[in-house]
Amino acid sequence: MKKHFNYYMAMFVVLFSCNNENNNINKVNKEKNNELPTKDTIIKSVNKTICDSGFNIATRFLPPEGFNRIDYEKNTFGYYLQHLPLKPSGEKVKYYDGEIKYKNVYDAVVDMEISKNNLQQCADAVIRLKAEYLYSQKKFDEISFSLTNGFIMDYSEWINGNRLAIDGKKTYWKKTAEISNTYKDFRAYLETVFSYAGTISLEKSLKAKTNNDIECGDVFIKGGDPGHAVIVVDVAINKNREKVFLLAQSYMPAQETQILKNFNNSTISPWYSSNFKDTLKTPEWIFTKSQLKTW
Image 1 (cartoon, rainbow, N blue to C red):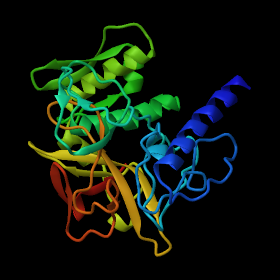
Image 2 (tube, rainbow, N blue to C red):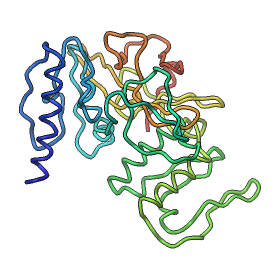
Image 3 (cartoon, rainbow, N blue to C red):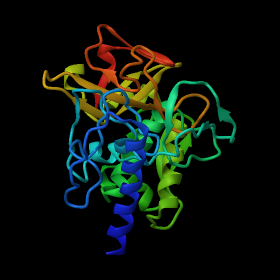
């Protein structure tokens, strides 16, 4: 009972704050099944797409007028991404060394720690989100990523005490640790993946996707050196089946994951329209239609 009480109190604060921020906000429907807000329970605003007091993606970012957030079933990757926790409004992105990213390209910062190593860059942040979701669901056998040289890093091997060994051009597993599956072990595994994977290996492991079918978890990616990757973390749709979506990224040097602004259309920013022509312009990279991929 206490857990539900605290949850509803948190939701009351968010909804009350948003209501004071905008006089054109629609009425909020009653919440169902003790879940976090869905398209039917999020406050909608005609002139505003950001609720400063929102504590996750679903409560911070309101779909543009005429659009409804797509509901993803609980325990899916889409639901996980929509409910990523965010740092308080106004917080700045931090680099791995604690310095601040002042470049005005983001509207929010994902509340997820990063190590003090210069490792969690663009593709790594995408890998991190997918891996964190699978770990949270205890789907340990599904946590597996390819390194740039093609070696497959299965987390199940790491759990069994095997560690990556490199001898010249030869890469293999070597038993050097006890069987363990703590979150600390999981993070150590990811740091190793980040060291030897990147946009090239991630791009090869993903499948092509059309922008009309864009969904949460899809990735815009250009493999290379340099290359870049951003991940779709929320999607909304209107009656004409047009979709809008939110994008998250890390960048170089390693930095906290951020929700990107849309400089192409300030009216719906930070949402992006799926009806873009040949290229998708994000604040720090330009992608083509053919660079949309899925898992």
